[in-house]
Image 1 (cartoon, chains in turn red, brown):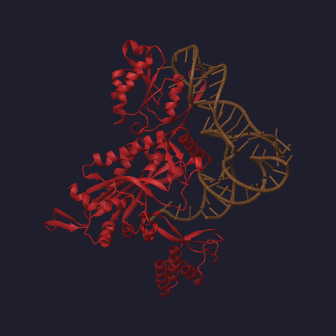
Image 2 (cartoon, rainbow, N blue to C red):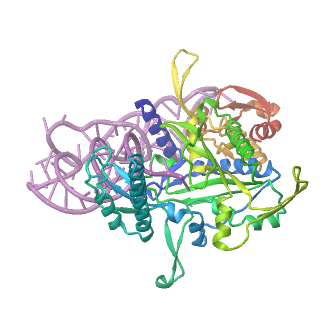
Image 3 (spheres, rainbow, N blue to C red):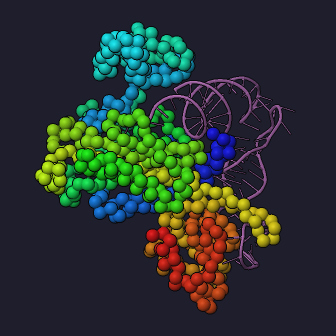
Length: 488
RNA sequence: GCGGAAAUAGCUCAUCCGGUAGAGCAUCAGUUUCCCAAACUGAAGGUGGCGGGUUCGAGUCCCGUUUUCCGCUCCA
């Protein structure tokens, strides 16, 4: 990473704090690691991004409906989803190289080596022993297995291992007021399962026919080993997910469709295409058939902002297995090859999952700009401006009377009253006009309007555009529609 | 979790060899001005992240701790 991009990231973090976008959580108590709060403008931005996504997914697609599932779910949910087994990996560190390994990866790699050497039997024995020990959570036994087989770290070449430790990435808590008798439940590590367990409820009550989708936004929690990089990786974060249910055999086409559709959504915000790229997964998760990330060029490099996964029928089948309740859909459409209806099946799923907090960071990173302005008298000036897309800007319109007397505030208040019911407005009469413009630039307000003495005569005002700094005279009565046009 | 760096006003930073903290910008009140960070007057804002130690005396030296950033690792 270059020093320049380092500085840029620092500048964005400082700006986010200084102008009320993002604060560290519990800052007066020295903060809480990797937890952040959104301030007055940050929460508007976040809400606007969420609303824009929600509208794009549900309102613009007749076959997508929403749910809002609880954060607490029945503990069996996480057994079915694979999170209890796959989300809590025993780890071991090599003391010499300081490298950390997942214990199962380390042993599997060793078993692979044995197989290559023609010792397949021994490899099998080791993997079987490992599985047994993992099931018993016998970490001392696992460490002994590693030592007995003289498994070395590939970096240091030594067997100098630490004890095996468990990193459970799910937060747990107790349900029930008496702790002794209470059951352990988890804060959801992803929102997807709240959709899967409601699959039939939604399908039946909203009378949905395949293909259809269920959208949800909400908080999820992961006790990350390392959570860093500002709001990019937080322990408490918000996801915007849509699970799209399709007939088996059509998932390839739908995967392709949503992969393209989701990138279009990003580009519809006017963010340059060259800052985005796809990253196709080579090594797939246990449930996936195909998967890719949409990556954005953050100040610290290209990083994932959204994932599109072809999840097969893994989730619904698992819930069917664990709940012993059929998760089937009856497809009355006629299969042209057989001439009969497709009938009952467990649908396949295409998932699109985007991190709302990452999207906020994406927008702020892309918007932040330190401009040098060449003034008419030959001198230069500078401004910090947030080029936030109009649709999602925290404040849409600033209403600024040129002076605080001669009846100008009264006219400005009239305009304020006319507009504030339709979008977020900001009123200010303090300080010189230039200073007020700069303050609005810093929070990304796309339009400023100034009421001056001419307004009293002919009802016109100057509208000043954030990005170009150009001004235009328009009639007061047109202002609301100009702004509405730009933000819809 | 390991290693490195850092933490002083809202922000960016000073404070020399250890002698009880300053600036610019921002904020607030007022005067004046009135279309791109204008000027003037005044005000407010700090137990120097927190805790301990050394010292007559610690923002400064030492230890611990918390938080942040960077590298490794992790992120199904």
